[in-house]
Image 1 (cartoon, chains in turn green, blue):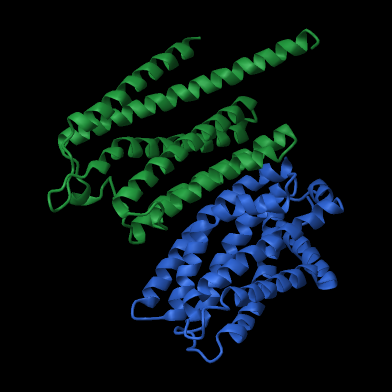
Image 2 (cartoon, chains in turn red, yellow):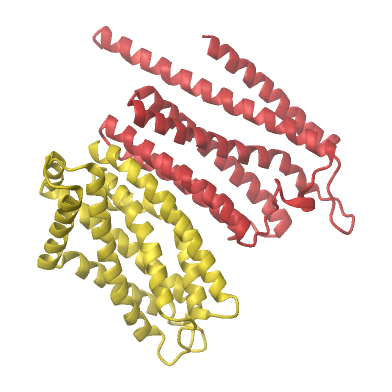
Length: 230
Length: 234
């Protein structure tokens, strides 16, 4: 029960922080502008897009981690955790795609471009979807868990290769971290960004805990049904 | 203790090769698939006109053919095993699981390379006659074929072991396999392009792409090798 309390606090805090970051993005953070001084309004989506994208990579890591732990221990709870982490990955990945596409339309004038970063992120979406397609096509419960764990690990290894290949192929997608002067954030932008980031991670954590709790309750219910002979 | 790992490896590989020699099932079906893909390419390029330089799209075209062809072969290689219950016997035998992985992997690699080597001249015969030749030495194409096929067969062997036990089978293999192969295919097409088109920096580009492919191969093979034991025992 204690975990649920923490999760609820995280949910509330995350909600507040992301909302505050939104307001700050529009009211306080200095607007970025084009070379000719025109204000770049579409850039505001950055405070949503980048935290969501990073959250997606982070939760995907837990897919692989719990997959690995499942393979080592064969304990069912790790399979459940890995699956929930992947569900969250899908959620964040879809949000990233949606916000990214909006930004692309405004900045580049097209909805979609086979630009390396977009391409590789699209691949990651397909990997996450494939994970669920694979799960759904295996009848046997233990087999399903093992296959899903193995595939989750492979898919997670694929993600950083995608990430780094974009640094190598000439990419027009802005490089936010370690990208030199080009991506430097002014301090008030940075503060806004960090608040948005922390808020998003808290949200991710609380979603994860709540989904896990739901699964546990569901299982207890099933067990109770069996015990009364339903 | 029975036979050494090396002997076990040879025995499994030998079994697959002998079966293929007798039935010629995989080579013919993969070869036919490649040939049919080229017919489809002719249709796809039919309206492009003579001035269109096929060499520009050739790297992509051959790797599209090879990736789907490999799916066919990978699937066959395990459908055999499960259809006649061979896989159960293989698992019952006192053989280390990694040996099974390497034997199946090398078998698939050999079949894939054979069909690739057969279909490249056919592609060149059908599409590249009367055009500029390949800019860089042909042996470089061999390096690409080997580098990419290792990754395709390695990961493919693991995934095919899973997909034969799913309800979707061949469709399932496609769904899980193609997105995972993206970085390797991208590198293979990049390297092939550098060989075919040439240019001042092409040798550097070629080796850079091959370094990507090699990195992918090493990471993914180690992972596939480590995961195989769990998957085949499931």
